Image (cartoon, rainbow, N blue to C red; front, side, top):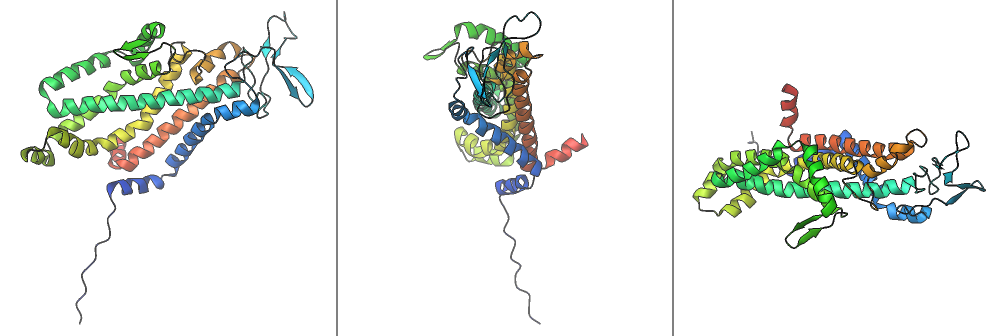
Length: 338
């Protein structure tokens, strides 16, 4: 009888590979990600579309004339009923490159403006998310790890921001800064710059990420491996960078799509109120505002950007749920028991 050879253990996957494998099997999350990627690609092609269609999305074209099936048709039509006062923009032609979604009240191509506006909305939401994550992580790490006076000062600053309702704080900052811009030492942001809504949106959401990060860091601060590193005399910056930050990275990654969706909604709301993106730039919020007076005659002007906001935010939220489940599968069970 021969003795059995030693059992060779199966090669274990690392945590990141395991998470990616879970995410790769989540079809709903992948479809949501694909939808958002398609929206981003379409918005990136805004200059190409405007060149192909031969339109200028940021310039009034009240006297433009289209040729549809060999028949010339003005972009701004004179009403044939009622008192015939003013002009009505042409409705959707459903012809790519030929006022596909019609024109707004200044004769501008809605489709071209939709793509350009989406590009600005995505840039603002993405950059504001990065701004929030960087400063919230910094505050959370310092407050949670060092404690004492540092924790007290940073926590009180976060409490002040936390005390204001989000949109009230955003509107207040926008009204103040939109007229005079922002000047912090050598850094100057003009009132019409896209950096202004990025800064405002980035600041107001810092407490919502810094607080959970601080809580996680405080728990890790008392863990055995961190206490051992402190006992060995490891410098604080090394412990923060090598030991603590990697352990909160999954939380920060999960926050990315959620904050992107939230920032997109906030930017659209501010721009709709004329205290976000300023002319001649456009965003989905400003286009909805442009179409507010055309809801009964040309509803596509306002409905198209609203539809794009819904699609983008929904896809980001669904992908965020899948990403959370992939990085922390226990969270799904905890939510189910709650």
